Image 1 (tube, helix red, strand yellow):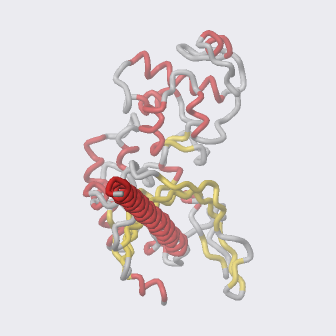
Image 2 (spheres, helix red, strand yellow):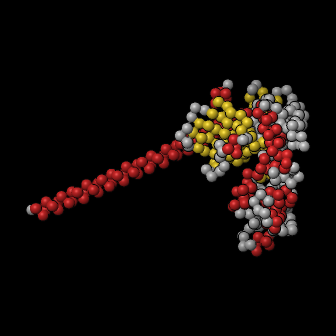
Image 3 (tube, helix red, strand yellow):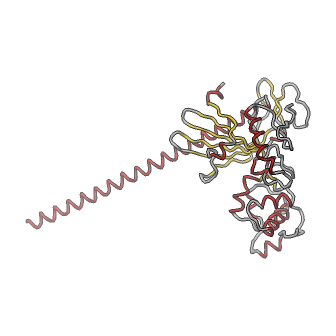
Length: 343
């Protein structure tokens, strides 16, 4: 009898131990699920707030006072609300290097930012040109059908302009590391062989072969000061204080007709990068490429056409460069309290 009682006690203790383990495992699972759910909720909220930054930027680009419009030269603007901070950076595509139009010299200068090997720079630049041109003739150090086949690739150059930046990764010699470094500097939307220096970010200005690099820092300061003080942007010349005309025109270069709100042609395609940081430290960064109408026709305070067309939308990873680091703070033009946008 005593032996049976002892066995019963052991069995009860074993069952209690098992139930305790099961209860602990259940509690841990519930905590993990609650944490995941909260993370998803916070991330969704941060994305929503970042998208509101995009909407505010689009609004500020419609300001009828050209000097008060948000600048699209890499400038950063900050909006502060009770529960979040938002920073938006605006980059005109014409201030970037167009991989469909840039010549060999400019493309090699671009590749010099990722490699100091002359042969690699030349091969990458030539391969880009061979990919986008219409013929099968191989440029010096370039690559057409045979070179791709010899490299063991089961595709060949399209012999058409690049449709997206991501397509550049298919070019012979291109790899993920090189692409990730040059992606912020390039575009397929500008449609011009030269970079608009007045709209280029500092990192692009430093690449352009014929630019006097000794003038870049003073020009960047002059351009930032003009934005802060609502003055016309300076032209990139030997005199960085020289400004351009602030008279607004439409896409044809003519003064707008009554009732028209002009949007300068040089900023008709823009990348907007918006980062939101909530009070609970949740954050999100999104990048949107928008195309503006050449000019907006207003009638009875209603636009007859949508002012923007979204060409690309993507959420950037946490590894992407934050707009809240010191280097980005140097580009900060103005800070706004959220109520300012409610008026």
